[in-house]
Image (cartoon, rainbow, N blue to C red):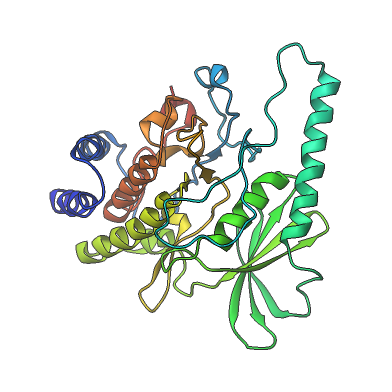
Length: 344
């Protein structure tokens, strides 16, 4: 079964990426299957969630980072934003403007650094007010029901009062996620529309939270399916193909997702497969074609991300390879290990 799944995943991935990367991926998959701790549980048992980790962009900090089990998202430095027209599918990539600010220089006083951070937050909040819709969602959407939660906030199912269409409303707490990161997520989802990316409708700013109104996927997440049953090889291949199509579109538009995992792959009962949750994505540009931040969810991170080395879009493909293990084995390798044992 393992050989069959490995062959299937490698066949699908070979359409998009080089033989070198496939070799590295195959070695990791094989090592994961051989060395992972025994599952010791049934397919329906709940595994402890792995923590999302975000650290600053500064290179000198990367090599000494040992993240704790759970770190609330913090804004990265130098994330460019685009506020122009929608991006056309297949384009070489949006011309993201240069970043507005950078980390304070050595010797800058604490008060000055705090002032700069406060100014950035104020500017981010000002930009956010121009991005979200006017008014509140309570009249336009009815029948609210909480269907999930996470480090970002909660997810609700609601209905458009005028059309009866079901939607998913994702609540983002601004106290835990910076305005810049929220604006980035909104703009990416608003401008990058693709059959393999969850559709963004609109958003609202309510008190200290942003509500994203998104397409409701009635099949739930891939994580829900993986935790309940083992998937057929053909179904695994289909999920990989659909996700690769979505990633190819993102990468062509200079966007790295950076948090590909089964929780962020949503399914429709019509057979659709779509990527979701762009809160950790990175926007590339000709001036900044690589990133160094240790960002993502530990067990799904590519080696270069963990080591703090420069990386590009291929880290998403590595993470999707780990999703292949999830589908075959029921959970990601090393999921039950602590962060201290997983990270260098």
